[in-house]
Image (cartoon, rainbow, N blue to C red; front, side, top):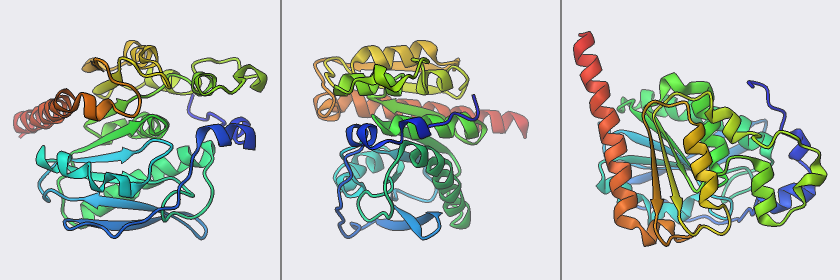
Amino acid sequence: MSGINYSALDIPEVLGFVFYPRRDYSEPPPGSRDHMITVDDGIRVHCRFYVHSAGSPSILHFHGNGEVVSDYDYIAPMYNRLGLNLFVADYRGYGASGGQPTLSNAVSDACLLFSSFDGILSGDDYCRDVFVMGRSLGSISAIEIAHRHGEEIRGLVIESGFAAVVNLLSHLGFPARTLGIEDREFPNLARIRRIAVPTLIIHGENDQLIPASEGESLFRGSAAVDKRLLIIPGAGHNDIMWIGIEEYLEEIRRFTSDLVCEGKRRKGHAD
């Protein structure tokens, strides 16, 4: 399962359903800074690092298909108040990033962005407790990192994610059966069956774009011993954080703090 070929999905008909690139940019607000990370010859992806402190754990976040980094200028302070740094990554063609998005490069870029972020933390002597999070489309990127770099992260958070790209296309109204892809687990569910890193799944009860059953499938399929599922009552796809803001943030706070404390306890025993 290490060499999934996404090129069969990199056709205009599919990409037009999956990606909604938006060119938008704002100056980084106080306490944040921008990074342009090279992912290919002449192509850089825009990321923004919203810093709480050098000693705080960090979340590497991959956003949904209609969002850009600057949308998180208003959301990041909520994470900072939880004692977390937030590093938000765009996709090619989004915001200030170069190139054009495809499923193939969204996956291949994810690990490059993770490695670059790890280098930023190391170079600036930041805490190395890192969580990876993906919202909706971003679940592909986050799960790819957890699959390939599970030993280097504390935990995985999936919000409004899907079990299979084919399912996502079907929910979006694309005649997915015409693609000739037989594996209906392709790729997230197949990947998460091999991911043992602690995992938190968050989903809206009334999500009409990606039904809650998709998040529940990921939760059941997860190989993690420590796996948690939060279904936000009454929430849809794009209002999940606002309808369930207290539950949403409290679960992220609890998940990250539990795992950071557990890591410190293990380190103390090892010493």
